[in-house]
Image 1 (cartoon, one colour):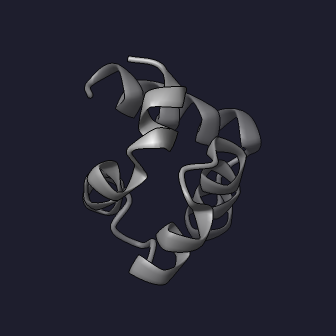
Image 2: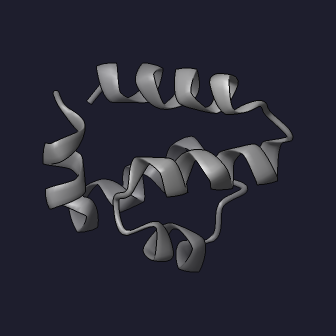
Length: 65
């Protein structure tokens, strides 16, 4: 699956993102609006990860969708 599909159907994938990254609030995930860079930034902030680690987490999650 590619990121364009997730971004286009963010309301559908939002719950899955919250389930994956439980420290993210519903409001934070809403504000990301499916933008990958925004999501990566939130993951960095909440989990204390580097940009590369956050991107890898997103890639791993994306491959399971």
